[in-house]
Length: 182
Image (cartoon, rainbow, N blue to C red; front, side, top):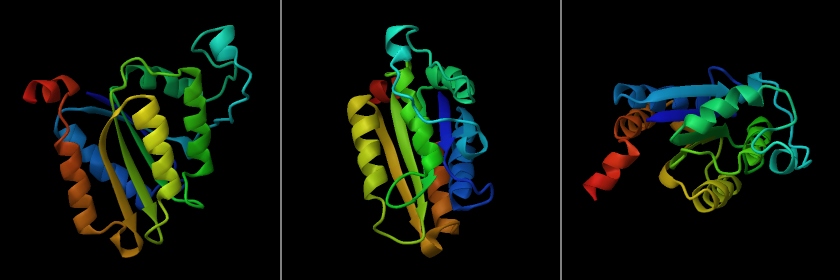
């Protein structure tokens, strides 16, 4: 399975990055192809709401920035993982810009699954990010939830957390295999 990870953390060695590394290691060990985009290190502008992608050139954003590096990988991905530190009960601004720009594709062609990785300093601050994940990805895009993983305070980078994330990545099966098991 092809998995795209959109990393919304500006810290290359921060808590979110550790969560991604563990999840990715498990998924790759299980034979999946994982591509991580560090959106904070990319030039991704906010959506212009110009509707070019829906009226003039379907599925093609008029803006020529680094989102065009993400689009081809997103279109081939069967799973998306959103990973972010929590900023004011939601995703980082950089990740939010990239999420908004998925609008150009509306429904990525092969996407079937999603997972959410969130880090924070305190517990109980995840509501905004989880709301968007549930409504925009699970409900609107009709994706299967492969888990919401959170870490707060001392849980960040803990051995227990990293083991759970690696195991979750290892437990992923191909979407068709899950249907056969039912």
